[in-house]
Length: 275
Ligand code: ATR
Image (cartoon, rainbow, N blue to C red; front, side, top):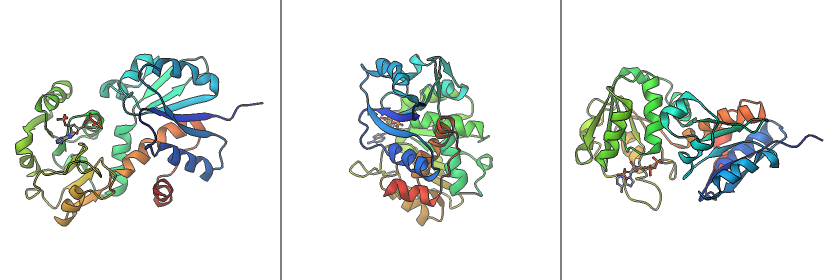
């Protein structure tokens, strides 16, 4: 008897993850055999869990906070983009026990913007990024790949933004957090990659009065769906794209590899995940 293919998301905490809802919805929608579950795994348990999952019928997994970086050391094969980003969010367990690691966050970011702002041209001008954490890394790699001419980063802890410049080079400049609004002046793409604006958290306080109405603005925070930052950008006439789509799109490549069907990200998918 062939086993039903299993996949899941590895993280800690994990109960808040929307990935089980997303992948379970897709499995049902396409009438596929399979399951997708949340796996709470501590740092100490990470390696043994990874080694034991294939025996339990797992063909792959997503990886989320706090394991995206540490999981790399257990991978036998790593895609170029995951290597560049220095983190993985999608694993494939090969039949011979080897682990293949990829990072689809940048893909998810780009696919979300292309879907939500079809006229957006990344090459048309500079990108301004708030924040310099793991999400910013993936987004910088994706933007550079898409031909963005210049990327300006502002982060509360300036040294982290400087580290990104050191890693990703010439196209990147850094601006002090207290002057972050200055990077908006000629921005074509504006991204909040900080946790500011998340429900129950601190507010995003950088003034947006220099933000041009021609900019496409997005946020990786998706709870609330329309963050105060996106509300303010929309009021200035900008095209805004919420962050939920990035999460949905980053799940596409993994689902396709594991279950053999490229899934849609559409209104029905959004409704299913938000239900
Ligand atoms: P992720 O991997 O999701 O990007 P992270 O690495 O913890 O998460 O990064 C969170 C980002 O939000 C960082 O840029 C962080 O700034 P610091 O590098 O200074 O910590 C930013 N951030 C979090 N809380 C913030 C706050 N109150 N004010 C400004 N920036 C904040």
